[in-house]
Amino acid sequence: MFKILVIDDDYSIVTFLKRMLQKQGYEVVTASNGEEGIAKILTFHPALIICDWIMPGLNGLEVCHRIKTDPKLSTIFFILLTSLDSVADRVKGLDAGADDFISKPIEQYELLARVRAGLRLHILSRDLQTQKQLLEAELAEAAEYVRSLLPLPLTEPLTINSRFIPSRQLGGDCFDYYWLDSESLAIYLLDTAGHGLKATLPSISVLNLLRSRALGNLNYYQPSCVLKALNETFQINEQNDKYFTIWYGVYNKVKRQLIYATAGHPPAILVSGKSVKNTEVQLLRTPGMPIGMFPEAKYIDGFCNVEAYSNLYIFSDGAYEITKPDGKLWSLDAFIQLIISLRNNVESPLEELLNYLMALHSQESFEDDLSIIEVNFD
Image 1 (cartoon, rainbow, N blue to C red):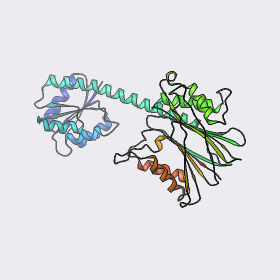
Image 2 (cartoon, rainbow, N blue to C red; image 1 turned 45 degrees about the horizontal axis):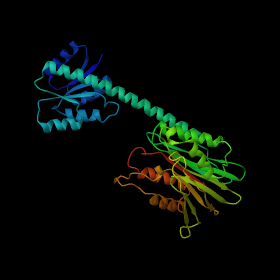
Image 3 (spheres, rainbow, N blue to C red; image 1 turned 45 degrees about the vertical axis):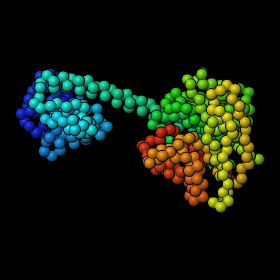
Image 4 (cartoon, rainbow, N blue to C red; image 1 turned 90 degrees about the horizontal axis):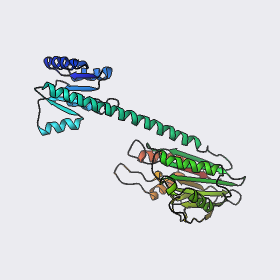
């Protein structure tokens, strides 16, 4: 049985509507003003509300606005009862969130037809909201699963911290770092195109393949060979049209040398120097198409020596492709300058960096996954 709330300060109209709706089998509760109506909405949980526009105190527009701006109540179908029939008045009602209008004097059969139509729409809205909540719960579980696969921080012989902040839709970010042997550390971060589980699953597949070294007779110490093998394994026409970018490197702690290769991924940032004046910044990137785009894509290795007290930052494009409150897009150059500034002025650059990015962002969640790895070399 559907529940309907009637809010009107005219006792005769309330009595008429209640009697008519009860004859149709609806459960009806009434209120004589807006404040009482709000209170009964919270306890009665109606599927549909018929509310007079002009009432003393809280008027119909204000009641409607409160209902429609509350996510828990927004699926309630709201009918404004009014003697106002100008276009401007209807526009005000629609802007407040009204779903329909009934003009006074009330025509019985028109009202009942609008109530039936409103209840059908209420059911659809409620079902859509339920499905949305289920989908968000599943995406949250998927994000938590991805997070459970990611590596724990390292503290020796070098320090590695990382952060993974999934977007509302969940994207395709994934990363890992582990010792290939006692001297060589493999480290990579990848980002699959798109959002949702279709983007997440390829990322997890790559992580499992690399972590288990299941790509066959492969030299995992040579990044270009790893990218070539991944490109042969994950071709776009065989992987639901999904390609991904990746930064992959191997650090030798004895030689203090880093060898790396990239496939369409943002450059890693290596910052060296003990002060702002002698800070040196290197952008570590090599030519290479994203994995999966072209079967014959070529990848090459880059090399660099790592000085003592250097910091390496590897990240997805979600770290800097952020829409600011003014509508402008933040830039990679601004991101790099922020890294340099924080590195020389705070004890925990990564935490401060994330705090800044969250403050910079103009929405509740990021448009894309945000992943960052920070490597601190002694």
